[in-house]
Length: 324
Image (tube, rainbow, N blue to C red; front, top):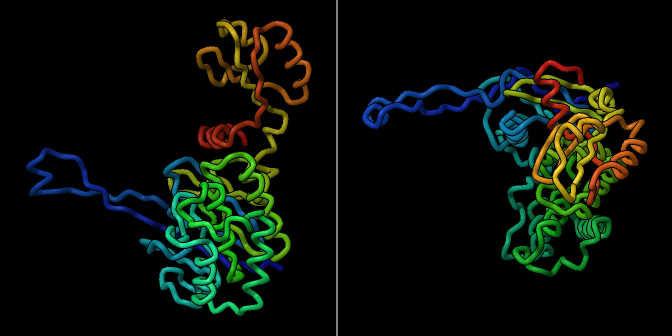
């Protein structure tokens, strides 16, 4: 039986943008037009789901996230999260959600993480026993115990983001909104955060709603994918269905020691990107080993990087009408 705790019905968010005119017209007779950041979208999210909200820059992902967390007021439509209208920002609602934004700090920079946590303890009315247990467990899972008494402004981005996650979970929220939680992080920090989020979601059945441009974030953390473009939903289904037609594709980035023509490179795969002394080609995963062996034997290769088909490519295919 499904138990939706996030319900969106025909949600709309418009912004008024000034139309460019001459100086005098702009000064005395300005004109505006409405731009839809989110355009008539509807979806439900069940309790315990881990969902990725994807799309290119400007698609409406962050705007949707901000309306769900109560930071923005919708232009029209219905929003129901845990039985609340988010923008009312009632204490009962705020105590049941957590929010982490990769480009904005939720921790006070002049305090230490421990001092921030103590502040959250008082705000959310967390008992001494629960507070000590949660701080200990969460900081151990993320391996950040040694940073608890270090001023937040002196932490690296990776250290700070891990502690932002701890702070967002101290009050045991039912829903955690995550907007680009691994942006700008090194690969080790990203892996730690992905593993942590998956473990927390499975153990506590917290509902996760994630936005990210990093395909590994999405694959490792989410089970369901909602893709938005120009403010509208163009895909809403499981991760395997999104990736179905890309399972036998890989990208190879070839770094060369000398110039080679595109015609020669095309013998090994479809060129998807070209730079000085570097090509990225699309190949078949099933023939990957043979292709790499042929490349090493016939091209002046300095290095080869094997990557998944980028998320941007998959989404671009969807928007141009190709199968996804």
